Amino acid sequence: MAGIMIRSSAFNDHDRLPARFSREGGNISPPLEWSQVPESAGELLLLVEDPDAGRTPFLHWLVTGIRPDAAGLAEGAVPKGAREWPNGFGEVGWGGPQPPRGDDPHRYFFRLYALNSPLDLPDAPQVTDVREAVAGHEFASGTMVGTYAR
Image (cartoon, rainbow, N blue to C red):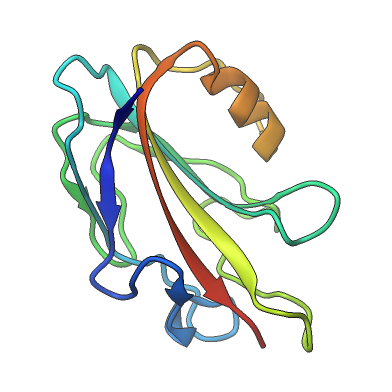
């Protein structure tokens, strides 16, 4: 499978997310940039999950319908025409990190998928719903990880 390069001007891969992106520090979505999206992509999907939150990964952000020619997302924004979905906090849009105080740093996986077609998702999808829907529709992806602890 082809690889999409994804990065952020606000943090490096496997580095700590700045506090302004946390729920208590401003709850602003971080800026992201990407490249090497295959020309044949029908749309892009962004999934941000915390696999350290418990038995099932916690959904922090889901954005679908991103145009394949988009080169990224500005801080606190989504591209025109894209759709934000409910996060694990029950709110539409970005839900910043808020791990329990004293936990080891949690990892936040920013996954960008190039899809051949839009996905059929439930009204309030969980991470597992998204993964199941993506299977068979993705032909390129990229991942970067941020960490956060309180």
